[in-house]
Length: 138
Image (cartoon, rainbow, N blue to C red; front, side, top):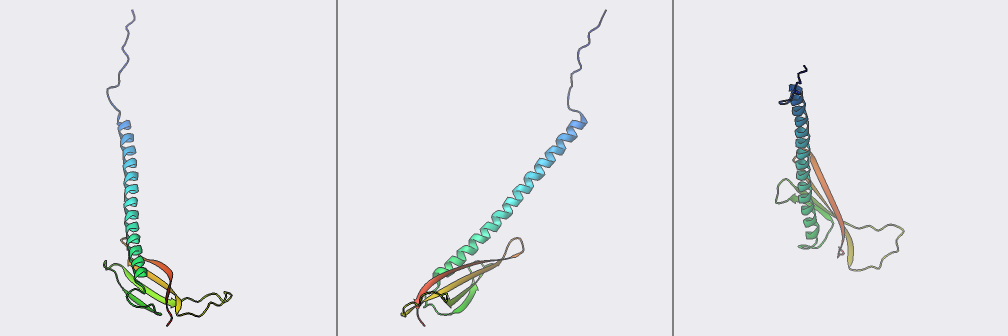
C-alpha cells in the first residue's frame, strides 16, 4: 500500500532570502538618501544664486537714480552680509566702424554689477550682470 505524503509547505523565508531582502532594501534606501541630499544641496545653491541675482538687479536699477551716472566704481554689502557687490560705470565705446552719432547732451554708459559670495558648499561664487543706460554727458 502506498502512503501519500503531503507536499511540504514552506512556513517562512530562509536566511538567504532575508539577507538578500535586507541588502536590496539597504541599496534602495541609500540611493534614495543620496538623491534627496543632492536635491537639497542644489536647492540651497539655487536659493543663493537667486538672492545674488536680486542684489545685482537691485544695484542695476539703482544706478543713476539717486545721483547722475558718472564714470567710476562703487562697492558695498547687501542686507545679507554674505553678498558683496561691485558696480562699475564706464562710458560705452561704440565699435570703430559704426556711423558717427550726432553730438548731444546725453551719453551711453555701460553699467556692470558683480556680486560675490561664499556659498554653503564653502566655495566662492560670483554672478555678473551688465546693461546700457543713457545719462547726461559729463
